[in-house]
Image 1 (cartoon, one colour):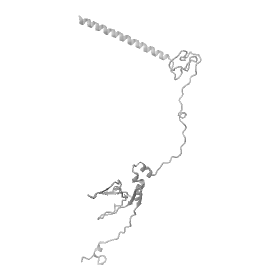
Image 2 (spheres, helix red, strand yellow):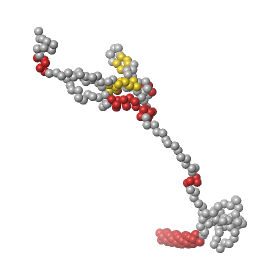
Image 3 (spheres, one colour):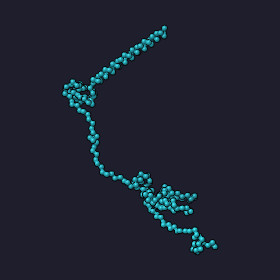
Length: 231
């Protein structure tokens, strides 16, 4: 019996909720339809044709909140009203100041000033250094001299220290071994490199080498000036 009563009560509650939901849905549909109807008949907003009656327009009037004696202008309203002011967008020329013509810009093209200002090289290793541009001699061995035409740069030597116990020597100069790392194909390239680094330089010209013709038969000549005696 108790289960039957509980089941009946559940059915009643569900039926009541269903009826309330149905009434709420119909009421919302009716409210939305009325709102759409009123919005369709309403006048557009302030941006185009909203005006105030002269009679009720005051300095303390708040836009968007109708006050006493003020309202929206309708099509059948023939009373005197403030004339409409259509909004307009300003041109960019009216906002910005006139552009003045500028003269020619001077651009520094000197590689000496451009590179060394942002190179991060200390001042002591720029203006105070002196470079020597030379072509090194080939090693003292029986080798050809075809591919040795390179130019080197050697900077002036700075203070060095030597360990008296072992004999090791070193220097705090970071550019002391630059001649071992850099090689230039021509003398002009080496000069340009020195100018970029603001180094004063000197060029050691190549000595004139005289190649005398020799013959293997001269070793067996009876000439006393060339013959070497074995006695």
